[in-house]
Length: 102
Image 1 (cartoon, rainbow, N blue to C red):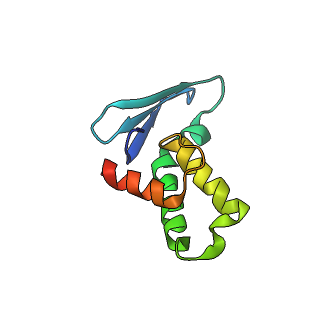
Image 2 (image 1 turned 90 degrees about the vertical axis):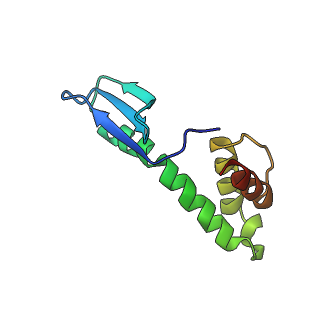
Image 3 (image 1 turned 60 degrees about the horizontal axis):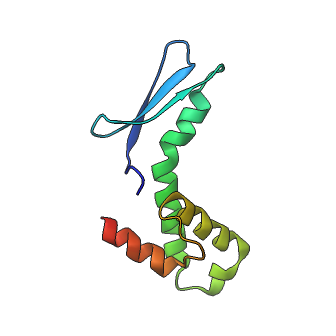
């Protein structure tokens, strides 16, 4: 299971090292590079919100026949990859698993 958000981040003064930190103060990730890490860290920091938003969008589509379109299938695959690594998971399975982890 992934580390739940919300997350925060801290970037070194030279912007070449950053830390993603959970709401209890534990380090989720440490990122280092030769360039400004701001954009990378901001994307990683947004991951929990992006995941929740994608789940919410798919939940809204649950009662429609639109889930078989490639975009919805790609969204389900992304959620599965980010959370439970299930292949071929459908929205009902993902939502059930999500409820079990809350």
